[in-house]
Image (cartoon, rainbow, N blue to C red):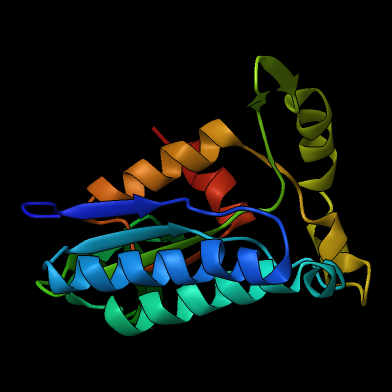
Length: 211
């Protein structure tokens, strides 16, 4: 990893609980530690959304993912400098790299833009997609998972409040395309204003729609 500025890890797999922990946990933890030792500035880890009861059925998978997340957040902490700019404005919201705060003052709204600038330290980004759809190759056979995933995504992305339902809510997490996850992962690794931290599936979809 000499002369490397960013790393994206999507290492993962299924099998026995011990195997899943090794591939989803130990392998990524070793990569995170090696990157930190080599001075890599940004590490992007493709983890997984919480699916509630499914977590218990795939215990080694999710324990490995969460252990890798914990290691990443300990080695690549949130870091950055904020610079404040003020200007009269009437809109408020949140954009990539900007936290927008509207305050009342002197009879007018004041927009304060807290601009994120990457720290000189290490930063970690965790992506938590749900089911990732695309064309999967098994040997010489291509399996078009998008035929199922795309329609499911179109339906489930519009019922976000239902994901808060007990037990079944996490199962309604919308799928997301492999292309979207890849696009956001590359941006997170290369865009200095991409904020560090955890990005859920809705954030992945939102960032993937941006140019």
